[in-house]
Amino acid sequence: QFDSSLNFMGFYGSERVVESAQVRLQRLWRKFMTRDQISAMAQYTPTAYVNFDVGGDDFIYTIRDQAELRRGQVRKLNAAGKDILTNGSKTVFGDLTTAKDGTDTLLTDIEVDGEGFITLLDERRGRLFQYDQSSRLMFAFGGKGNQDGTFRSPSSLESMNGLLLVLDREYNTLTVFRPTEFARNVRQAVLLYDDGRFSEAIQPWTEVLRYNTNYEMANVGMGKALLKLGDYTQSMEYFRRGNDQEGYSDAFAEYRNGVISAYFPLVMLAIAALVAVPMILSRWAAKRSRNEYLTVIGKYRYPTYCMLHPFKGYGSLKEERKGSLPAALLLVGLFFLINVFARQATGFIFNTNRVDQLNIFVELIKTVGVVLVFTVANWAVSTIIDGEGTFKEVFVFTAYGLTPYILGMIPVILFSNIAIMEEQAFYVMLLTIVQIWTVLSVVMAVKEVQQFSLGKTIGVLLLTLAGIVITFSIVAIVYSMFTQMVSWISTVVNELLLRA
Image 1 (cartoon, rainbow, N blue to C red):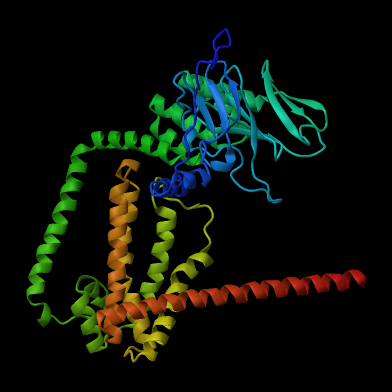
Image 2 (image 1 turned 90 degrees about the horizontal axis):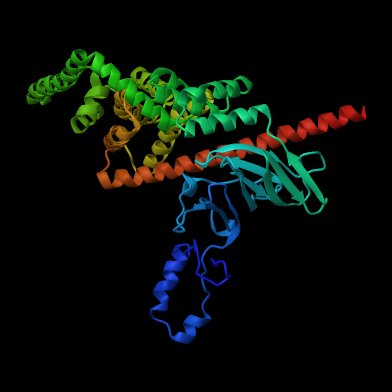
């Protein structure tokens, strides 16, 4: 910074050294080195600025060197030199992936127009990226080429009267971009929402969705506007279309509060039932457990009995040989179905899957395929080290061990549909309990069917997992070779047909 007489006043917005593990290690070593050794070490300097621009709001916007950063490359500096760009530190600016030719984004210029929209120039790929003040990507356009709107070597970017001007130093050209009607509606809607005029923002967002119903920013914008206006059900629908789980959670929280207020007596009755039923069942189970060793266990009751009494259940199942192959097949089928159900029906807030892209074959491999490979691998390993379980018994016991997962995932899925993001810890806790219970159940099943000690069982399971990895690796190699062979045969046939 300089004053009006060009006297140096000091530095502004200076960066800090990125605190990597290597920097911390070097700092530790410096304490034990001599002055000459320290001077010979590599010096770590703060992240460099690539370019900057002064916006119409008199804030300084900067681009930082991308070689040392992945997120937070763009900053908005206030009078104290602190970054105040909303979500800027969490955002990856530019292209998220490497291009097919191996090139990455290289941001070299920044321009902030009079309405506060931030445009970045990617010199390496010749693209332009425009963001709003919340660091949300609005548009990406341009590219390398010879057509209008593309560049050979873009070097500078400016805005003027609503236009964007890009200088190409190799073509010696100046390209002028004008906003389309689609872009004008997006920009208008963003400005209206940021100004607190939520009802007025609905009309331009509606126009945007008329052009492109899948435009995420418009769907999220409609969701936010309707949330502010109190239309929670419609807001949830738009947030779902825009894949905004946090916004959906906020709208669902308000909707849920309304339902609880309207049906408070029924809600309290349901809560009381949820508390009372487990207490009654636990007392009933306690009474039955007094005569547990005198109880005759039915053949088809073993899966649930082993889930609740794994030590006696699997031991008795081995001794009495009451394992049922049809029941095991049914359990494996239910394991497959509950996985599909969990994938498709888990609440939107906690669901990371694309529910519109279900692949039944993949789900079969993840469930039925894994169970079969586990059975083969465990039986093979256990046979070598004198295990007592037959192939059928290993399959039956493994299937019975999946019962906690099959039954436990039902309340987990139901809870995921009534919980909000702030209650994620409870969802994770329930899911973890089910997973741990299932793992322990399978461990006890393998221990009893093979008649191993606990330590030997764990060792066998580790070898079984190694066998599963090897099996799937071999399958992947065979599949790859088969597809290459089919491709080669197809190429030869096409060549012969062309020559004929």
